[in-house]
Length: 77
Image (cartoon, rainbow, N blue to C red; front, side, top):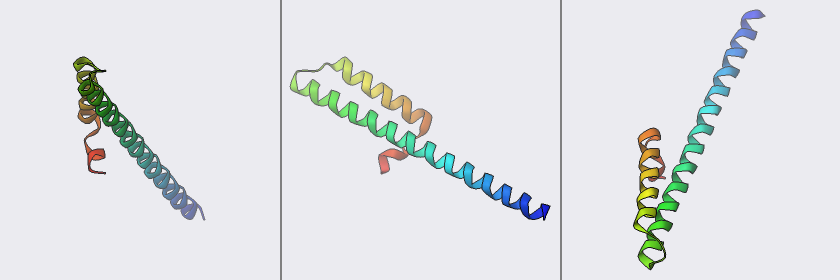
């Protein structure tokens, strides 16, 4: 009986870990998408004359930092 419970516990822990990993991936995708959206908005504002090149560069730098840390998987979505 103890062997069965140990295996069940291991399986449950593995499933929990996989769930946490998937949740982290989804969070990082959302963060990347938000940064990409901010870059687009900054670029659009710059082109319309209501934004600045500095704001666009700041948004680009934030996006590049995110990609360096978490990869660019969200771009393939």
